[in-house]
Image 1 (tube, each protein chain N blue to C red):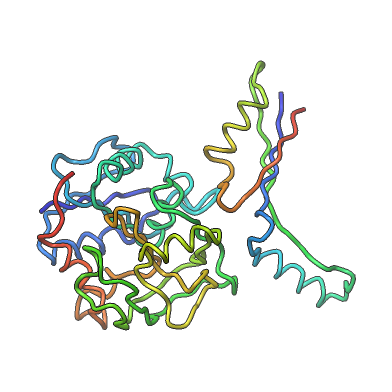
Image 2 (tube, rainbow over the protein chains, first blue to last red):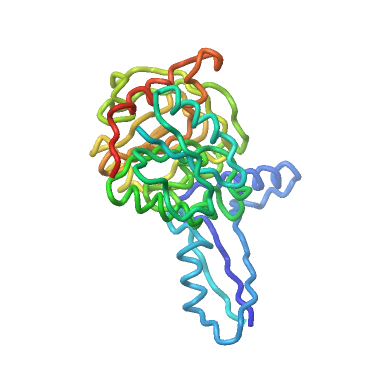
Length: 76
Length: 222
């Protein structure tokens, strides 16, 4: 059983890395990029019986800092 | 007077912090991250700078879950004194002892130099050795020192006089130039600049020594 967690900085929180990537893309001539947000993908291998609620608890406790980050979970 | 300095794998300012406490007259014990209790009768806990657990996941995130951090949080919850410097500040925000979070520097670069700080309040055991408005030179050395909190939290910090230090020239994008903040009971200080690196003539400056001198005699075990 697997879960994929996406962690992104919340809207309104400055993302200096995303901004740097946007500038770099612009410098390469990709002039149609209006914004870049960079985040993390965390893949979890889970034992049978693990639930999305378990993964939510992991996100709240450790995987995301909800002061600055939001997260989404895909169970597969 | 007893101080405990926590040591994580990757801490690199633990001994500097211990020396600063010692010079101010504290008996200092070093506490390993796997310990689950602080030494008996500790008056103040120092959470040092460095790169605890390699800064994996987020700066301070793994350290915040370590056994010793649970003891540090319990110490703070019962009104104990604590100071977190640099990575220690990041760890204290990750534990929730202090509000907000530290983001990547706005300029993306690691910055290592002495900056001017304004003492924003002298109303705490940590800052009573200064006058409000004093400008002091203290080194910073961080990549993730960009203090962030939502507008409501910032307003509460300002209304409750809990901003301890601000940058005279904001080096990292911190909201409201914030360099250090106090907990609600004013007994926990978190700051990105390193007062322990400006606490001895040999450091090239002693503007940070007043933090430790002021603590001596003022803190009591909780």
